[in-house]
Length: 135
Picture: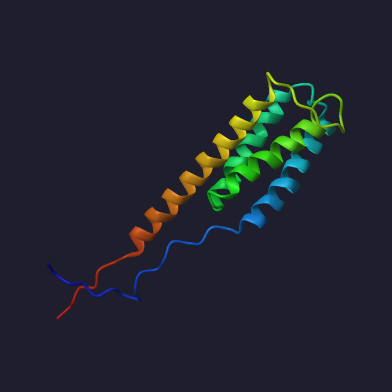
């Protein structure tokens, strides 16, 4: 076994963003996305709104914790259900549609979180540089 001295020490993996901040960003961002789709007049195509919210949930997952993923999915689903489907302003449950939407949003948030954790772990691994004597 050979010991190496580290230059400046090992820098840790960046901490994920707090769950409450991720949920707040999910609420504000999902509401903003649905509002933009409403202004553009494309809310008749809820699959487009679902796809955009899934990408948004994945992007939030990159910086969030695993514990934030279910809440992110539910917040995005709630905004989608209340403001992007008919009747607007009323929460409803469609047994054939809503479980699929929640599963899609949850999968996107979890995939984003996994990608973020792997990316940060690889970056932390690369930061560890062995010190070599120049003597």
